[in-house]
Amino acid sequence: GLVVRVAIGLTDDAASTAETAYLHSGLSLVEGDGFERNGQPELHFPPFLPVLLGVASWVVADPHTGTVALTVVSGTLLIVPLSLLGRRLAGPAGGVATAWLAALAPGLATMPQIRGTGSEAEYALLVVSAVWLVVSAADQDGRARLSRVAAAGLLVGLAYLTRPEGLLVVVPLGVAVLVLARRRPPRAATVAAFAVPVLLCVVPYAAYLHAN
Image 1 (cartoon, helix red, strand yellow):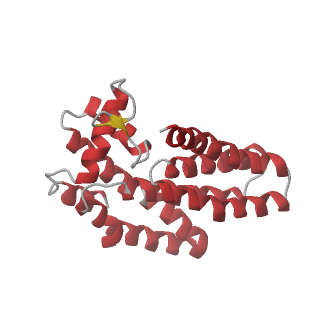
Image 2 (cartoon, rainbow, N blue to C red):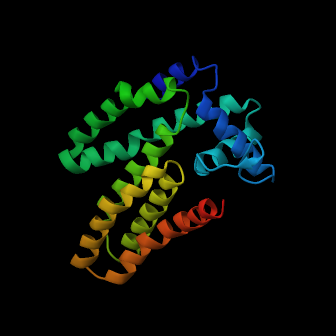
């Protein structure tokens, strides 16, 4: 999966319009000038991916190269939670088959790389990982369950800060957490473990949008 993504990424030698916007606002933020683009508050794209790209610019001399590398890494890591979900649904063979599909399917292996290194790969990694954490939390008790639910809430919040539609993921996963909490205690702590990280991500950005 990594080889395919790297091969496609090497053909991406020009930044897309969206990527340029991410880079401008991300560099502005990490350089201490605020979350701005062209001197104005950035209100179109959420901040998580711009921040990652801004930080990557400290490591990689060419910002576009950093963007491509982040897309490649995110797309490759996506194979892991997908294969774990496949294993959960269909056993070891299902996990292996899912890993191969995730590694080679055009929609996951090539499209994020050839669409101008947007936010698709990072968003998919956050959402699918959150789904796996909630599903796997059903097998856990006590702190282990709470930690997985809390991590899922954080990833959902970061998904919202990557693409606004990430907020919609709160609904199905929130229902799943409620069902999980109803089946086994601690009920209130389980719900809070999911809700608090989501709110910590959503509320500050919503306040920023409202203020501007």
